[in-house]
Image 1 (tube, helix red, strand yellow):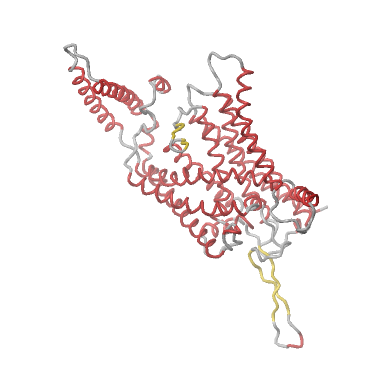
Image 2 (cartoon, one colour):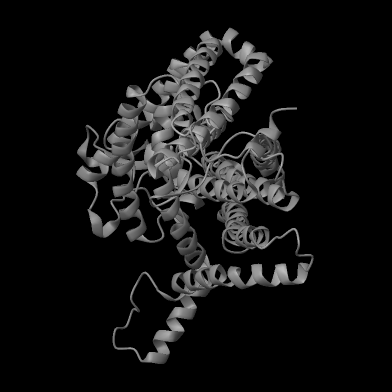
Length: 541
């Protein structure tokens, strides 16, 4: 009866920290979404959906350090199990609690991606000021959402009924093979079906990480280091541009002063110049507001801190680059190849981030803070990439992401992309620190024979403490539940491996592009040629 009491402090500590982080995540998501939400087109249902979706994704990532902490704290540093974890049933209960946590969160993610977010998106798309028939609006939204539900069902069925191993008896009948499929489904408790669906979403998240995060990791720190142009200089430049455009307009209008009509080319040029002048007037109004804005004045005072933060971020990005390169090189040299998903157990080359996490893990929650920081770093750099690039579908630009001016549909797209990015973050962290993600700081005792001076006495055995790896006995090292989700299907691991190389390449390209770009405007993204005058209502009051 002493086991549950002894177990309480360890498990309560891990879950208490997780609960605290959960509250911080929810608060962060609320502030984050409200910052980018349009004041004119704000919609309650889309705002709540965006906040919840982003929070679920971040909470799922926050569960990873708890998973690692619980398997690590089952053992002493000398490799022996603690008293409360000596019983195998107790260890299974802890693993089951984490597994059910993943089940719940991943199921909610599937619900958000394939049902809730598409429904809210199409519900808002069907909204019309003259349409007061809510039933028709809901009906049309459900009609479009059915396609996403069908895709989700197909992924679950594929993951459920496509076994990873062949039936033991190749000469078995069709009925015996069907029985084997259902036995596999029951023994895995639905892990394969859910893992296949999540891995499919993570594959899409990998594309988003390669596109947005890799570029954002270079553009965010360099923008902080370079800063923005001064407001006075931009206002002077804008005034000169306005005078130049007005002069060109006057020259074109002078051609028709005697009543002669303008040619088609001149009329087109006149329309373009008038649209450009209108944009310059809007730009001037925004620059006036920026000049009076207290935040910009405070930002100028904090310029040295921004430079230091930018230097820190670029050093972190370079650390990730080096670590990921070493990890991929390790897999290329020491794994069994494509057929096994380039999976390696442990590290053969010195991995700086993996060593740092292993050193911090015994002093909980330092590793938790570091993993959460890494996750938030990926979110911020991803957001920087999305904000600079916008949301694209191949070569078509769908939406822009701008503070206080992002449409509800764009917010939903934004959170969908960030949700998928955070899903892939789990694999990125595994790539950065494979030993830490798989076993934490677990060690085990290996009995080795020690020869004695007197051969008649035989050999004695001595226990040597070793870090857990693939060669460890199954009952001596516990694998994290996250690792099981990540590597249930080898072909996904193979795609992720090549995706990491693509990530490194895009990061280098983004770094070169960001270095070649000049300072950005103090009102970057606030005024574009395709904006309307009505959009200024959100700023000019």
